Length: 133
Image (cartoon, rainbow, N blue to C red; front, top):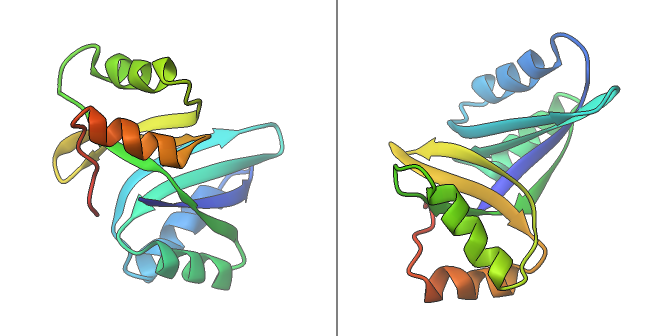
């Protein structure tokens, strides 16, 4: 899955600018996460058209990029996320960051790994379901 990452200033109104830009471009937003420091933040998003979103954001003056991430369906019960993360940890695959999302009414764990090829093997060998957006 492709994720859009946007570097934003840590000041009032910046996130509104990002969201308004996507709204004007007709983008459907499925998930969003923001991590910040004192001066800037990284807004990570899953949407229906990552390339189009990046183009719109860049046109509005935002620095954005596309990153490969995994969105694995979770059971809707306590401990589901822990079980998924444990599968990757036991295989020695680091997770750089993660966040949860509801995509098409289903819970998903969205994350980036240090080894995408190995992550694909883990998903396949454990019968995990990836989101299709």
